[in-house]
Image (cartoon, rainbow, N blue to C red; front, side):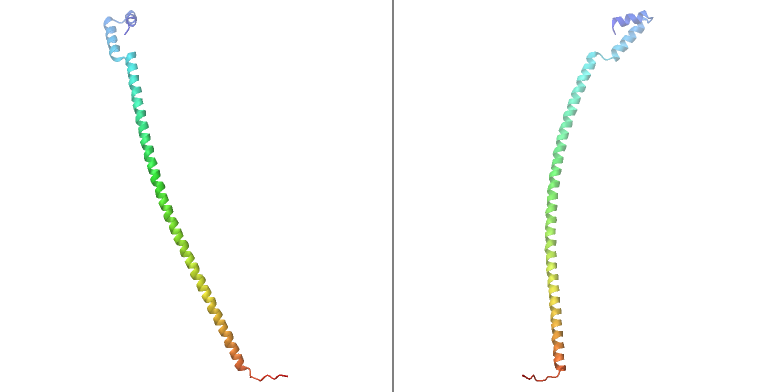
Length: 139
């Protein structure tokens, strides 16, 4: 506590013992400008350390994220290749089914055609038997 402050307190009615006790309390409890500067400097150092730690953590997280992205891209590529193979297999199967269906339809049409020809031949043969045969004369 400054001498001017002590004199003002004594002038306003404080006893020497009261001023001494107050001065001792202020001296032990109050921070000096040097104390505040030291605390400020210590805080600045701590903030710098925290920033450095935060940057290092951010860098590690970026690396981990990059690794995860890379693994995901590989996995997606594998899945895409697998799907493409399955689609190609399905395309082959569809082509085979279409070819088999076409063969079946052509076979059915051929069988029906033979059946119709057989029916027509049979009908013509039956008509030939039913119509009496007369010799043709030439004029």
